[in-house]
Length: 497
Image (cartoon, rainbow, N blue to C red):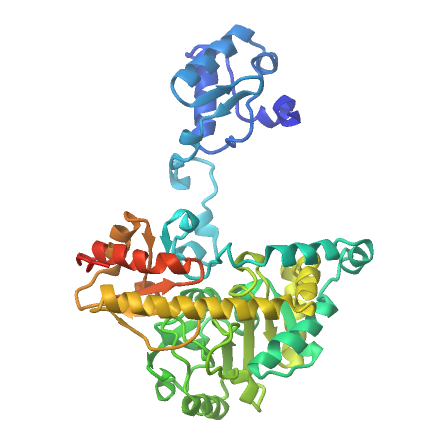
């Protein structure tokens, strides 16, 4: 309760003046209401006691008591016995009051005019904040708490907190990574993808997006051209554009990116060859070799995102990086789909020269990812927990994918899905005239979360009849009833079970 009595934190909220035309009580109420609506008071933080606030403001205690009581009556505050007054949680969850624009307030900084990149103008991610409360969360990129290796992860964190281990990671490593984690990535993760790299050819990142941002910052500038799959990964597109690059959309078919449509003017090619984002089709062997040949002929750098490649497929393909003989493929990997997306741990595999430059750049950005997390993950890998987890997830997701395909066939037969094994999602194309955003809203009302597919396209008129259904966070027994609810939302009458 120390914060409650630290009146210094409240000094900026109250401006009480005897010269004001309002009563002291009204000024106190006005200051508290403004702070609540502007989200300046956290719902978990008690307000100062009436006595302390009265002393701070130099007013009678009764004045503060009356002000608080009226705010309780109006629903802005709630009184908790023996604990004090708190912001009403219902008020705290309402949208914040719009702030005055800089141009309308004298002396305010116009941050929009000062910014050099338009980050807030880029495409927003799909909103899945409350997915865990949904009955049928067909969301992509989240985890299933029932499959998370809680005991094993706790064990590795306890081991990382041992005295000798703390000495290994507590010091500032400047631009280095945990050598044990580099060793485990080199020995346990990369060979599964057919990649064999030296330690100086690997750098740890805060997930795949951080890896892409570093590559764009280091290699791209205004006027750079990046060929990308269309549909394709929206955040990668935004990251490249933030670096000043122009993205050149390239069509995708049942064999992956159409390599003959890649412009020779592109300096970079971004691809997801293991499972294309979002259709999940793998890049055919013929096009893999054609892509590499074109890249060498046109002096292009290929950025390979190992999208959804961590799991065991029925007929796994090696990474594009594994057949690259010219060193122009940069491989980006992540542990988000296996261990946990919230861990934010990934890596880049490239030539030693490029990795050295990335280390120098990363030092100015964040020095290195948290070393304690690196050591815990390294121990998780070294003890074989990750391999066991991959097998368990692969079996569970394979069963869920088959169940989802069956349910779609039974209850949404007019929707066509891509016939691709592996991965953690299904890409669906609906009948002409389908509006997947309207469908998503109708489905959400029935506690079904889906992802409209228009955000993946890079064209003025975005197709609206596509959607992506994730399987990583929905239990097997909820898939069929979830699709039945989705069919109802789509206007179909589900057949009797």
